[in-house]
Image (cartoon, rainbow, N blue to C red; front, side, top):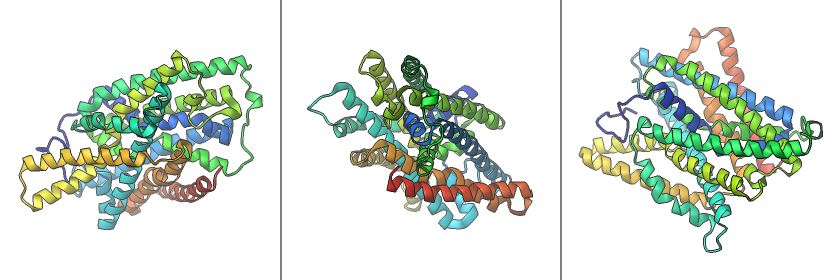
Length: 410
């Protein structure tokens, strides 16, 4: 899939600064899943939950670097342009079938994450206003015009200010949640010994792991984020620093939530908070943050869809203006379709774990390991091959068993 720099909605030549890239990484990774972490800690136990989040964070970072290495190698061999996508790696590794499979998984995974955003916003708006005239579905469709307008913003650099605003909203909201959690936990004497350290329910571990994987969403944005940075050589270090901070925050957030509410912890921790100004502020802040995060989550989806549209327009000799119009229309259609599907989504916690166990596991662990083994081949050292095979096998086993556990129920 090649990008046309003359088509601004497909790609922009503008590059992001280190600060802008930092904002985009945070807003891409941190989403609704973090609110399910206290519930995941309740299911797995606080020790198992903490270790699980740390392992998932390190593994995700490693696999992100694998993608960048694969793209750089192919680019150096002139087998791939600098703007290569995840789907391009699939094509260079396994041909057309590899591209189709890769892009299909990205499409469904990113759509699932976007749907989770819409469901969360709709449920929280319904909780805030408690209107008998409007349902969760009504609030979801009220967001459609706003999200369509935001989706028409063409580049990651242009979205950076919205990313930073969303980050501020998320940080403030999470800060208030932690404050409420700590107050609640301290009121009970911070009952560490009274909380489960490692669950005896074996099915609870993969369920919680699926939730943790879902928390590190936005994997399909890795190459776009790295390619958008002005000094791409600094991306690995920036990504490592950012992931270290996010992982630590995730562990503290899940731990505080579980300590505060114990076995009463709900799948969305904000539902445990008392109905007062601080909890309403949390809900509003998170909703605002996710509203502005939504178009970034859709970027990989639009990238794939618009690549196909561009190919069709080129074959039909359509004008550039007609191609741009089709892009605007396609982005609007994608938002409407996701809103429609979101109105039928089941319980948030089960949905998030299922997506994390299946799509996110394939996208975050299995495919990067396969691509790395295929593209580098015999040039890899023995320990590198062993590590890639370990990640690949663990990712497949986790996807199978995690899916089973989620479907059967914790």
